[in-house]
Image 1 (tube, rainbow, N blue to C red):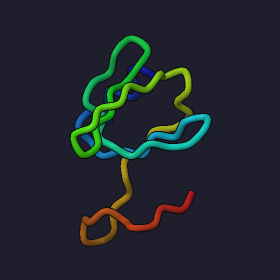
Image 2: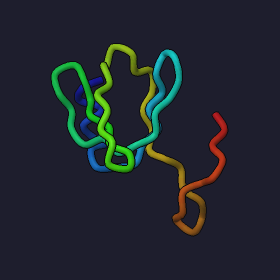
Image 3: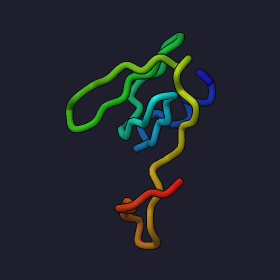
Length: 70
């Protein structure tokens, strides 16, 4: 998961955890954690609890979608 999450550095992502989800930009990937920034607030997420990471979906015009259904 560490090597795969490095592909998302600098991109706005949806990060699915065991107990919910986080939206933000991945700024750094460490040994077993990632740093996620949203509106100037930085969070550290343990990769053991990450289930899925995906880039935030965009519509045809390139804008972020308002509703994301999974």
